[in-house]
Each structure stands twice: as structure tokens, then as C-alpha cells.
Image (cartoon, rainbow, N blue to C red):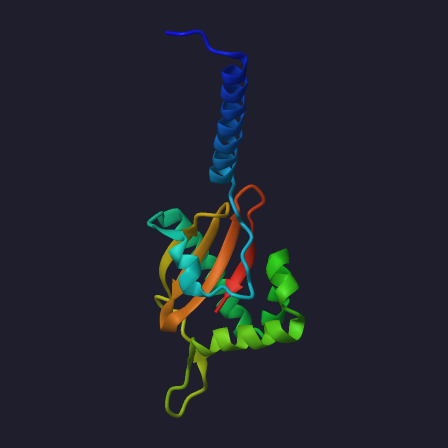
Amino acid sequence: MDKLTNKQIIIGMVLLCILFILFSNVLKGLGKQNTAINYNEVNAEQLIKYSVESYNREKFLTLKDIIMKVLDSYEEEKYKEYYDVLNEEYKKKMNKAKFNNVINKFYDNFKVYPENDEMYIEKDNVLIGIYEYIYGKNMYVCKLINNAYIGIQLDSATKQYNIFYIE
């Protein structure tokens, strides 16, 4: 093998530096978790597309309990208080008037009007499935009856939750 010239060594070092920079940027991009949801364009199908169906019974029951509280709040006329439970990004998209419109459409999915009786909220077997959103920590998209969806982020340390999506 012949000796390398100084010019060849410099070109080789520059190419190695360029390859190193490209490789490190690719790895950084793969490691990032983009938890930001573009609320101007998102819908339930997109959220589920970037989710994995979960069969965790404990999570299922926890999410079901939260959903029951949300549904019970309609009958108690306390549903407007759920504006404070929205996560900060979702809250930025919605003012209270828009939230009231969205939450009322959400409740319309569960209203039942039997003959000669008062309207009530259907709560039996309301939760069909849960999907863990892959770009967020403890974020679940819950598929409910009548094509309704609610996104809930659990904080197991504080036993609190946030709502990040309602349809």
C-alpha cells in the first residue's frame, strides 16, 4: 500500500467528520419523542394511528373510572369544571365557549331518549378499547361507544389525570 499524501489525509478526516455529524443527527432524531399534538389538524384516527392497542386491565379500569366521572358530571351539571382538567396545549386551542360546544357534542353520543321517560346518559359498556399514544408518556386514546373518543394522560405518581382530546 502506498503512503497517503497530506491532502488525502485531510480529505479523509473531513469526510469522517461529515459522516459523524450526519450519523449523530440521525440518532438524535430517532431518540426524540415528539409529544406535541397539532390540535389544528388532529382527529381521533390520527391519534390511534400513532398508538398501540393496550390490553392492560389495570389501565382499562382506571380509564373507565375517569370516563364514568366525566359522564356523571353531565347529570350533576358539573361538566364545565372539566375545562380545568384539560392539558395546557389543548386548553390553548379552546376557550371556555369552544370547550362547552365540544363537551356537549361529546355528551350527545351518550344521551338516550326512551319513550315516555326522561333522557339519561348511557354508561353501560361505554369503553370499547384503549390505545397508548406512542409519542407521549402515559397518554391513552379511549375509543367509546357511538364513535366518541377521549384522550387521557395519567400521572400515576400524583393519581391525577389530564384530558388531551375529546371528540
